[in-house]
Image 1 (tube, rainbow, N blue to C red):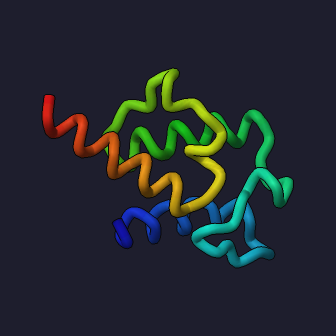
Image 2: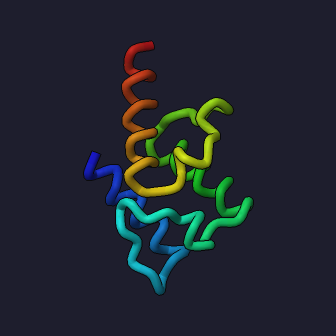
Length: 83
């Protein structure tokens, strides 16, 4: 999971250059995310980690923090491996 966090943090750092994000920091509460960026984030996660983010996964809580995004990727990876 740590490797996934590093990849997510690297992606986010391109957009949040003046702020070092902590793994548990809420990017929505910080005001960094708009609807366009949210879609870019979903597309990045799908492409980078070869997972499909379904409509049932499109809950803001899944994308608020680096920790939560990494957990979602772990969950999706386990489900995909079981199929």
